[in-house]
Structure formats: structure tokens, C-alpha cells
Image 1 (cartoon, one colour):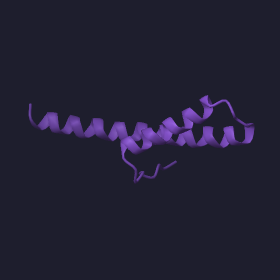
Image 2: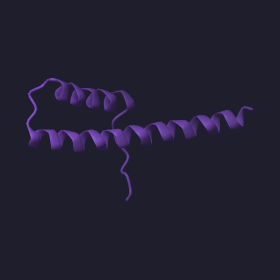
Image 3: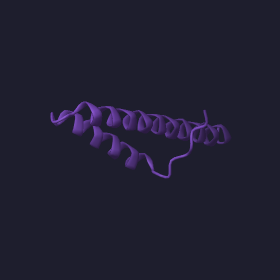
Image 4: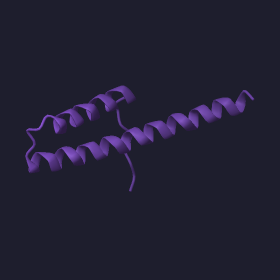
Length: 67
């Protein structure tokens, strides 16, 4: 499965995920919305992990060239 690159930056992805978490913590949660929000949150988590992995690889390349 190929992941498409997000056009959002790390802060935007984090903020969107925080909004979903706040929605769950709000207490007015119905099961259908919860399933959709959970799926959306899992996609955001995957995008955040990919973003961090890319950043880590860039940092490794930079530090490898300067050491």
C-alpha cells in the first residue's frame, strides 16, 4: 500500500489530531461518528509517523555529511 504525501505540515496534522482527541474527551460521542473520527485519527497518526521518519532521514543525511 502506497501512502500519499500529505500537503499539511506537522503542526497542522498535530492540531487536527488534537481536535479529534478533544472531540472524544467531550463526552457527547455517538458510535457512528466515533468510528469515522477514529479512522481519521489513525490516518493522521500514519501521516505524522511518515513525516517524522522523513525528517529523521533528512537529519541523518545532513549530519552524515558534516561529521
